[in-house]
Length: 304
Image 1 (cartoon, rainbow, N blue to C red):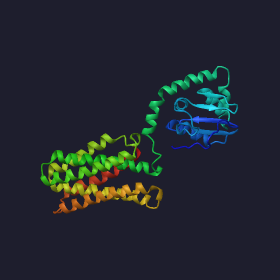
Image 2: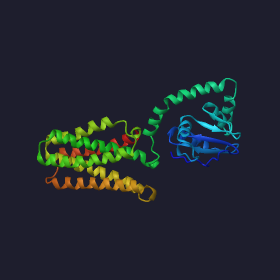
Image 3: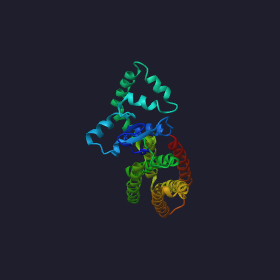
Image 4: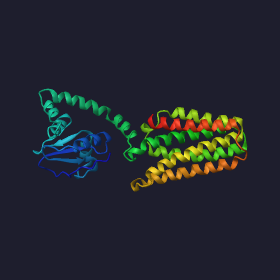
């Protein structure tokens, strides 16, 4: 979340000046909550990570290390005392500020705050690993399924290369795995680790098996498998492309998905060209199983 300060605070102001670290995702989330309220007295929000007040580098580092507020009398408060002062100005939080002012409570809160600061770097890494503010909220689950699918696709072609010595199969798999790896890297760049499917090991194993089994049977089964997989993937991408088609703000994501779909469509056409003979009943059943499994995989990846 990118929360700009609502007011640039002068050296002295008629209310409370809240100094927060806007580079910290945890701090941004908390400050965003406070800013959504209507304070009972003037509050100025100053993102010290942007250094809009012209402070020295040493002072900036000091203010980013702990939470600070400056009251209307110019007194600088930090840590628990700063939180108590801020809570006293916010509707719905004043009771907590009053509790914090009781004898002996602020020191206890200060000990808790120092404990939080010890773990803050680790929590920040976790927060950044789960940040998806750069993505449309209704596309996160779709992109998780795309990431899982591309992970599985790379494994499919690895399975083919492992199981087959057929020159045509190896040529196709070598070419396709390069493209699928590029897609996977694009999805990795979009989707933070903590938002990726927790079932990635399963998708890797399943993909490898789906690639290896037909390769053990022969090239005809391999090409039919490619057609079955890519037919599903092209349709899957099309659903997302349709969703973004009328959203100009999401044009870069829309373009990326169209480029991925075009690559998959080329894989599909190549599979069709290499499929010179009609499919037998066993291959048809195999392709139906792939289609059904792909639907189940998408459903799971969107949720887990």
